Length: 120
Image (tube, rainbow, N blue to C red):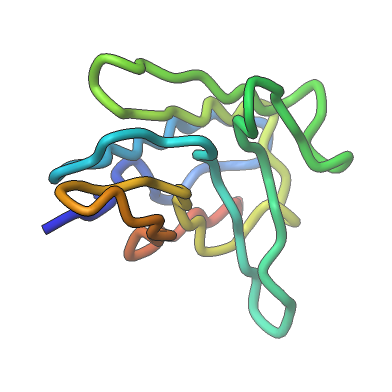
């Protein structure tokens, strides 16, 4: 069974930092996109940061504050979030476009979501 498992959310004060982790597991042949989306109450889900076919993409609202990194050997991505603001409060979802074995079938995966709350 292929899946994404997230960790690292929580409550933090404005200006603080958090680090999210997302590990892909199962019979994965390759991953051509992996990153983070978020959904705030009453809003649509939006891309935060992602590796997409060799490039790194960030939402304008997080540039300079968030950094995405990865460990290819572990099929894991991280999101380092600094200088957090109340408007960063949302459920953060890991997302990956994978090719899975044994049939080399393309499969998009979503994590279960982890809540980030920025509040004093």
